[in-house]
Image (cartoon, rainbow, N blue to C red; front, side):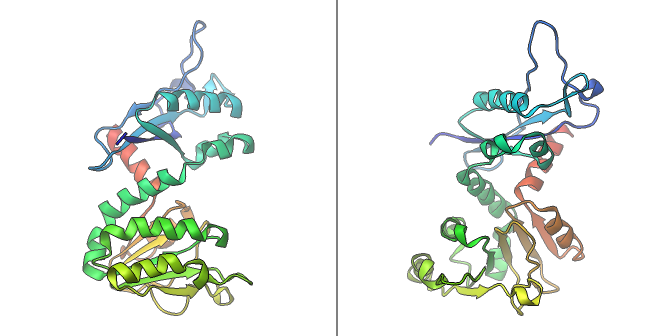
Length: 274
């Protein structure tokens, strides 16, 4: 199986480039430099690489979307294996709407990253608490989110005895019919009866009245603020890497371990420089 590599484009650390720009000579064009981070990201085939981007590409000339996109594409082509890109939010601001979709990571890439995060940070929560909570995003994405969740949770289903999905109610859409195949698979294999619970926006966007615990897998683009049990160690995995969610989890007094693709990649880069 060919290795999958993720190239993380992020703002260059302060002081890495003199005058905050790439060094450029008259006989060569500006070129970004990528490098493999020390060690693999997991025991599987996911390899991390990183590419720092200064705020200016030459002297005090800011990046244009065309120049930056071309420079990043050249680095991505040199990455080992089946390569994909992940952009830091600040780098995303350098790229115009025209190029933004081009640099969205593939769904397979997000699933690979999520699998690494679950194995590293959530396996013990599944074993000790046996609970998983899934916050589904937009209704148009329900099918692939359910399928991705099934693949992510598959290694841990023998430990899980409580599985809940929160969803957005949409007029004319029968969520039970739409998700029937996925829900039945949990019952056939492990005797699980997942619960489907609508978000209750009329109560401030809360995820119902009951409190959640164990491992929370969040596909939402904005914070849903689920109620959480006190006194338990909870792993909150945010696939959108939203700063609001990170701050909210940080205010819980250390009971919630917030993890996200962005936090994971930033930590890997920081550790490589240290």
